[in-house]
Structure formats: C-alpha cells, structure tokens
Image: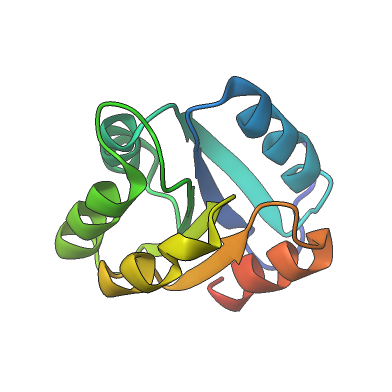
Length: 125
C-alpha cells in the first residue's frame, strides 16, 4: 500500500456528462497528493447515488447534464448531505447565480487555472 500524506486527502467526486472531461479532471486531480478521486458520475442522478456509496468531501459538478442537471443534483445533495461541498465547474458563466442559489459552495468556469481549482478544493478539505 502506498504511503499517504500526514493529512487525509480530500475525497472528490467528479460529475460531468462528458467522459473526456471526467478523465481529464481525474488525470489532473490525481497529480496532487492532497486529493483522492473517489468516483465519477455522468449525470446528476448518478452523482447523488455515488455520494451514498463513496462519501466524498467535495463534488465537482457540471451544470448541464442529461437525466438530472447539476443544479437539481446540487439542491438534493445539499438537502441530504449539507457537509458535502459542491463546486459547480461548468463552461457557462451564466449559471453562477443559479448554482449558488441551489447551494453550490463555489463556482468555477472550466478552463480556469489548475492552481485555482486545487485551491478551491483544498479550501473545503
């Protein structure tokens, strides 16, 4: 078993309907010892299910997804698990107000500097 840092890593769930986005985020996040990716979801409904299963500290949530969008999933997650932090990570800056209104703890636009993403995730760890 590999040695972990003294602090427990922040457990992250990635919710995005695009497989390429999920794999890119996973590849980036796994380069940081402070973060452990504990699951992925292709829509909001899967994200809610994955939270029950993997108990993440932080969810990186896309806004626009099929079946259940990220806004509805965020509302459900914050009602059921208020301790889980949701970072809305989307291409559409126009979702900022709605994302924060549904309970998202932070809002980032895809393509932001990796250091900003890391700092945001670690601020909830």
